Structure formats: C-alpha cells, structure tokens
Amino acid sequence: MTRMAATRDGYGQALLDLASNEKVVVLEADLGKSTKSLHFRKAYPERTFSFGIGEQNMMLGAAGLASSGYIPFASTFAIFTERGFEQVRNGIARPNLSVHLCGSHGGVHTGTDGSSAQSIEDLAIYRTLPNMTILHPCDDVSTRLLTIQLADHDGPSYTRTARNSTPVIYDGREDEIVIGKGIVVNDGNDVAIFACGVALHEAVKACHQLEQEGISVAVIDMHTIKPLDIDMVNKYAEKCGAIVTAEDHSVIGGLGSAIAEHLVKENPTPMEMIGVQDRFGESAQAHEMLELMGITHKDIANACQKVMTRKN
Amino acid sequence: MNTTIKGSIEQRTLIAMLSKSELESMARRCRVEICKMTHRAKAGHPGGSLSEIDILVALYGNYLSVKPDQPKWSDRDRFILSKGHASPGMYAILSEIGFIENQDLESYRVKGGICQGHVDMKWTPGVDFSAGSLGMGLSFGIGCALAAQLDESERQIYVMLGDGELQEGSIWEAAMAAAHHELGNLNVFVDRNNIQNDDFCIEQMRMFDIPSKWISFGWHVKEINGHDMEEICSGIEWMKQNKDGPSVIIANTVKGKGVSFMENNPQFHGAAPNDEQLALALEELGVIQ
Ligand SMILES: Cc1ncc(C[n+]2csc(CCOP(=O)(O)OP(=O)(O)O)c2C)c(N)n1
Image (cartoon, rainbow over all chains, first blue to last red):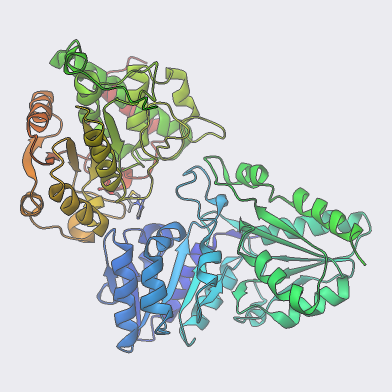
C-alpha cells in the first residue's frame, strides 16, 4: 500500500536532519506544532526562537540572523507569512539574504478552517520578488530533501507545505530531487500535465484514467516554481504540443502563469490551467474543496481532452 | 440620499435586562453547544470559545442594540470577534439571540454551511467582521467607531481580543490610533486566558504588564473576572460611561472554562472533544443524557 504523509512532516524532519550544522536556527510564530518545527524546538531549544504571534517581526529577525552568518528557517501558516510580505520584500529579498520561509497549510486543501486560512496567492506574490526561490513539493520525501538543500542555497526561499496527508511517491527516488529540476513522474506524448503540491496526485490519477482511454500522458512534478525549469517546459511543449497545469492555488500568478509567461515568448503552446478560478475558498473537507474549486483528477482529465482538440 | 438610521438613546435602553441567573443559564447552554459543535466537526477551537462566552452572553443578553430580524440594520451596535477562531462561541450566542437557528449550528465547518470555521460576515447573519487572521479586528473597530461619530450616532463598538493576539504589532498601532482619535465609543475586551496556540503565553512571548501597556497608550483600563456576570455587566456599563476615549477591560478568564479537562489545558485550544470527552463535558455542564 502507498505510504501516506503530509509535506509539513517532511519539513519537520529536515530541520532535525540539518541540526548538525550549528548555523541552522529555527524561528516560530506560535504555530510550530502545526508547521512541525516543534521537533527541532524540543531537541534544540537554544537555537529555536519564538516570536509569538508576530509574523512581521519574525521575518526581519530572520533577516538579521542571516546577515550575521546564521541560516534561519522561519515558518508559520502560508497565509500568515503574507502578513509580513513587505518585510520579506524589502528586508529579505531586496538585500538577498538567505532566509528560508516555510508556509504550511497552503491551498484550499487545508479544509474546514475556511477561506481566512486557505492561502491561494502565496506562490504568486513571492514569485514576483527578485532573488526568491519558490518551492511547492508534493510529498514528504521531496519536502525533506529540498529543505535540506536549502541550507546550502544562496538567497532567500519560500517553501509551501500542506496540512493533510497525500501519497508518498519518492521513497527510494531521493537522487532525483534537486532544486530547480522538474521530475518526470510519468512519460507520455499526447499531452503534458505540469503540477505541484497536492494537485500532482490528482494529475497522476487523471493520467491513469486517460491512459485507459488510450491517451499517452506525461506528468511532471514542478516542485520548483521559481526558477522555472525552462528546459523541461520547452521539451514537453515540443514533445506533446498541449499542456495542462494543475495547482492548489489561484490560476492567477502561480505555476500555470509561470509556464504560460515563458511559453508565450518562446514556444506558444495550447494550454489549460487548473486551479482556483479567481475566488475565495470556504469551509469544507479537503477533498470537497478540490471538487468545489475544480482541481480534481476529473477536472484535469477534462482539461487534457479539451486542450488536445486545440493542438496545431 | 443618506439612508443612515440615527439611533435614539431611548431605543438603546429599551432592553429588558436579564437577571444574573438567566445570563448564567444562557452561558451554560452556549457551553453545551460549543462542545457539541466542535465534537461534530471533529475540529475547531473549544478553549477560547469557553473562555470568552460569559462576556458574549452578557453583551448580547443585556447590552447590544441589535435586531436579529434585521442583521444589517445600519445603526446597530457592533461586536467584532477579532479572535475569529473562537467562532463556536459566536455561533452559540447568535443562535440564542435569534440571528441564526439552533439547527444552523450543525453547519459549523460543513461544506456550504453558514457557520464557517472562522467568523465570516459574508456567511453568517449577525457577524460584523470576517476574522481568522489575528490582529485585525481592533483596526476594523476604529473604522466602525469613526463612522459612528461621523453619523452622530450613539452606537457602541465592541471588540474581543485574545491575549495571545496582543502579540501582533498591529494591535498596538490600533491602540495608539484609537486613543489619538479619542474614540469613546470603542470598547475592547481582552480575553486573558494565558494560553495561545502552541503553549502558555509565558512560554511563547511574555507580555509583562498588560494593563500598564494599555494605560500608557492612553486608554481607560479595568480588570475584571471574565466569568463573573456581575463584574462583566458593571464593566460594560463602565465602558459606556467613558466618552472621552477608548476603554479596555482585561478579563481574567480560564481557557476551556466549564469543562474540567479542558480548563487551563493548551491541548484544547484547537482540538475537538472525542465521543467520550463530549459525554463527560455534557455531564459536567449538567446535560441529562
Ligand atoms: C495572524 C495570525 N497568526 C497566527 C494565527 C494562528 N492562530 C490561531 S489561534 C492562535 C492563538 C491565539 O491565542 P489567543 O489570542 O490568546 O486566543 P485564545 O486563547 O483566546 O483562543 C494562533 C496563533 C492566526 N489565526 N492569525
């Protein structure tokens, strides 16, 4: 049976793995139990700093630590990182300080907490900042490995994790996980699905469904939204000639936008974008939210059929 | 055309006051609903709902000038639950007062339900502010208070803050602005239950002398026992008399108040009672099962 886990657990594990590097420090804003930095706090209280419910303060505290030679990992819910957006923009990204932010509970998949907690714009807003690396992994293995790589990464980053468990796909495939490199989860010729986070699993299901109908589908895990793996995008645009993007995020400004912005310049390709269609979420279970927002495997499969009719 | 309804003083005192014991029974019924709602949803925030509920009951029971059949009546008093996660407390009192039906409580955290995970003015009649992100309600309250003054209305604005919530810097921007603008119609409660999300406040972020902070920001400040109806009622009356500037009541409360195993227990900030715990809670609250 497939192992299930939440990406936020991969983050918590990575912090423990990184602890042997004494420059690694952890910052919290009263959500360490949820983002999973609590394990590090318990083991290394002297290197863990509570900022209370004060996200803006935490962002710049992290910047100061980074400027003094430390490697800060700061986390809260994705939505509450946004509270400190301007601090991130002017105090972290502009001076290019290696502060690593993690926003957990991203997307509508967060569920019954409702719209105030469901960040559907985090990837978009951080993507607009020069110097930022943006990650949105789909399982705990890739989250763990990408977070570990961040400790040696030059410049600031934002990693979005999710609250709920999803299938683990990279057990035993650790070598394939590298910041900035998309991963071909399934190869195919007729249509390519680029997905990230929880939507990747919906894309895999859509792929199985379509393959039964005789359609050859490529599924690519774009765990790094920025810098975009342009080579991968170009390759599958040429190979398949039709692209669907899938993300638990607004269709405005996220993975779909990033790919469209690139392709329109170099290699215009018919595209469909699956994601939140310019609206806010609401309270419902995770799977109900994906249905409500049109981010299920059925929606992705329909989008594949549709985009293939537009092929040149 | 200006369609603002100007509230008259007479209208605002035409409330049949509930007795102390009537308020206490209402609070007990609300506590029962808070436990049931979170149990049904298998999620939510019982602790901070149980700590705030006596104040909500006193306010809605005896003081707020509102019309349940006209939730958007423009000259209503405002109640802003800034600690919007404590929504079960809000829904319980709204159903007592008649803004929503008792049966609506079953929609808490359910798809399409009017009782969203965090209070939301777009979804629930009687909710004046969409909260869920801490540190926002007081600033919104300033806007409401300024509007009431522009309208030359006597309507009062009440804001409920958590003590953990005071750690947000925006609270202190708002505190400064409210005193600067001499907002005598702005009345704040701090639900000081000493616990936040991860742990006790003294572990997460010590706040030292909270009353002195508000005093130095230019507010009228009073401390009360937030579970004593007489102290709550006289506190509200004290607030309404302070017309030259904003008032804050630091209400000393117990997180999870009324359910022994939830009391003062950080675990029940954001966790629902299971079947067994619900049965125990209802027994303690005097529900015959
Ligand atoms: C801006 C923001 N940061 C973090 C959270 C997550 N959160 C929800 S409740 C809570 C603790 C609140 O503590 P307190 O204000 O004392 O509320 P109470 O104890 O009365 O429930 C936290 C950190 C949030 N809702 N908003």
